[in-house]
Amino acid sequence: MNPLSINAASVKVMRSHDYCHFEVQLGAAGSAFAGITPEQVDELRKTAARLADKAVEQYKVAKRNFEELDRERRERVFDARNVDRIEAKPEYERTPEDAMTLKAFSDFRYRTRYDYEDDWNEL
Image (cartoon, rainbow, N blue to C red):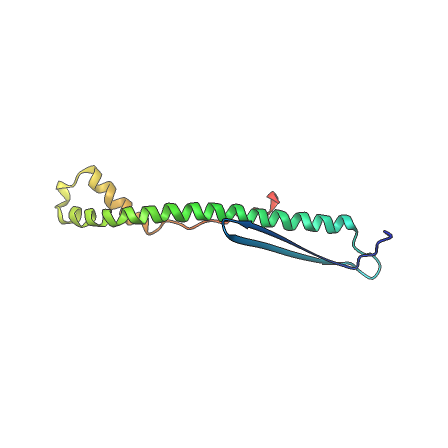
């Protein structure tokens, strides 16, 4: 056994990004017969750091998606006025651009939020 006998270990990793704080805390316990090695503690720390880094990257993507969605919402207010005007027209008078505007406006509500893409093999 290692001269340093570690029976339990806890690691905490904190990241700050864009005035947000991300924290991951992991723990491990050894058995009565086999303790935890410093190498295992270091691997635990690295795993916590990878998880915190992944949280920051996911935050960046989610923030970009939210900003894009917000921009599109503001544009849809204008489109809503156009939709009312287009829907007032008889269908045979509508242009292809009118049809496209109606389709885009109706599809907007089904826009998805951020997918966390939990691919655990990338850690």
